[in-house]
Image (tube, rainbow, N blue to C red; front, side, top):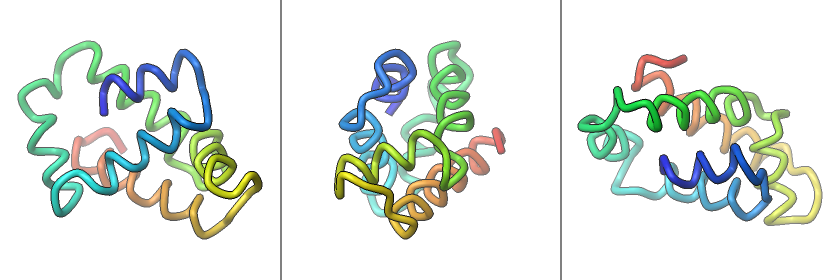
Length: 99
């Protein structure tokens, strides 16, 4: 997740956005599993930068991250997908005390 977020922050490709969403949504059985995996590196500089990219680009359904996920999947906007992306990201950020 950290590496994919950093890649998105640099390249901003639709595929990077989708991969990032996919990992957050599907790692383990819930966002709690992602948080457990991140806990040992949560305070590392790279992790904090990745979380800031998520906050900046993915926490709003109209943000660049959710839009690029929808464009990757459907080649156009999709309000339902964009809301899902933002919801999962906001949940992860809240659990990381970043919200």
